[in-house]
Amino acid sequence: MSVIGNTALGFSEEQAMLLDVAREFCKNKSPIASVRAQLETESGFDPAIWNEMVALGWAGIALPESCGGSGMGVATVVPVVEAMGRAMLGTPLVSTTLAAQLLVRAGGEGRMEAVLSGIAAGTTATVALLENADWGDTRIACTAGADGVLQGTKKFVTDAAAARLFVVVVEHQGAPALAIVKAEQLAAGAIVANTLIDQTKRSASVDFSGVAVAEDELVTGSGVASALRDVRLLGALLTAAEATGSAASCLDTIVDYLKTRKQFGKLIGSYQALKHPTVDILTAMDSARSFIYHAATLVGDGPLDRDAEIACRMAKAHATETLLYAGDRAVQFHGGMGFTYECDAQLYIRRAQWSQQQYGDAQHHRKRLANLLLD
Image 1: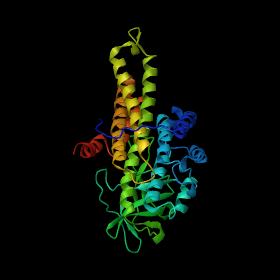
Image 2: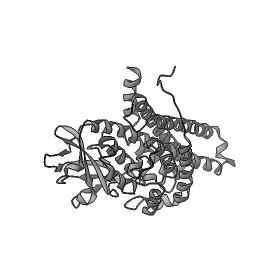
Image 3: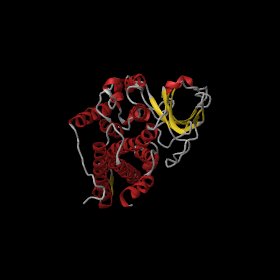
Image 4: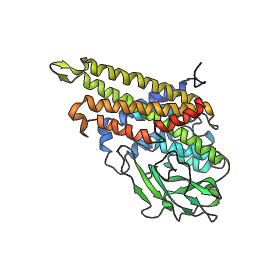
């Protein structure tokens, strides 16, 4: 009997189709030279590629058809994000998807229809969630007063500079609430960019103090707390999917190098000391894919149950540690060159460090898995 109970694993025709299309798209649009070209830009992505992704329907893939989406569910985002991770393609898709999921789960598609329709049509959005670097801290210091005026700053808001819409987690009348803030409502200098180890990613501190939101732009009620819990888990799952794709790309980079680099007259790939860790990466990556698609099988449009929570946490813990190991081996196998930024191995080890922290590291999730599985 499995300790996790539910071991369901399904891969639908829609997911298979999306994975094929997304892999081809990302491979063509995001060769490694294009990834490096975006490292020093303000946004970290090519707006033209984002527009093409919107045209493919990816911005609304998980949204209801009534809001202009495809109605395919959040599980269908997983293969797209995995393909993006494999190509190291930086766009606001994950941030926008999570913002939309938070709104539809907390406010309902009827009330949120206008906002969600805009997101499905390509309006970039993000969730302003954290107030410090601790993903385990669920306290909310940012507030919305009785007059609808916000006070407080959010930290590490992903894709903040590119976002046209912010879903701000606030405290209102003693309970969690969501404030919908447009980018043009922010004061000058409200967005202060963070310096991240992974230059393919962007985040910022955002000061929302003084921003006034109308009554219909404030989402309240018991559904907010449940939606916040779900989005933290979905964020962990999508980060795991991206990390799994990046691990696959990292493995390709390792294998290509082992098949071409010679030392002492022999290809270095012939040495067991390099063969065995490479196989370890392959098996761990295959396991990571099983974990993310197991989780994708269990997550739905309703509140996530215990099995879905377990699956999301297991996927995040395993996938990000797999990428961390793969990135470390890639640097070491490339020798002295591996420690230079010109070597692509650096892109993967930096992505691994970012992925570890996003939505909680492996220890964060295993601590919670212990309570779920072993209590």
